[in-house]
Image (cartoon, rainbow, N blue to C red):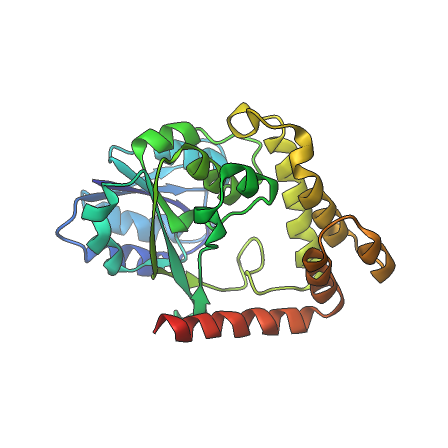
Length: 304
């Protein structure tokens, strides 16, 4: 059975799409654990309407407000042999279940996603970074490579290494990606979009194509905070020194600086390609967004 963990908070306009699509799967056994993070709108009421009429869906309120706390709580309630986190404002496509038999032969599995607008109209394809699969843990750790948590599913044996998430973790994606990589003997890359990744104004990170200066600074500061947490975690750092993060720290310190000069960027000890990326995002954010969308649209064409 597949256990889905879904955090919800003020998504009354979106959560129905996520649940209804799951309910269409009748062949593969699954359960959905919805942990509501004290929504102030009608999210809990909408979700309860589904939970009351479908025994596969369990709805609970978070123990203490916080996404990490809720994800840990949701995991503690799962009973399946495969675990997957999904977001309440997105949609998992039914094609995902076609790979269930193949998944059982691997420790972990990942897939890409369609990027959509607020109404779930497909705009582009968001591909998993192939280096996450092909490179070793040392490379993945030093570059903090990750992919959103919804791209992964993993066996319970791997989940036991991932959970519980540290309560002070600022967000979950990197933690999950790192430990999936570290503790999976093999990873099955489905290499197809299995998910509708909705972009809208209420997202914590402002959407993945939002390069507004305040959003870039916010994301970089959160990553620096994340690194501080990772450095103290044995599950992540065993066998490594803190200097493994030197390059990625420098990169995010520059990104988090409000008025960083071109001179400081060029003199930094990071790789040339990283300098070019900082210059593009910090000095020409609209162009950075346009180029990102262009790449994803090109990837979408190649997928068809």
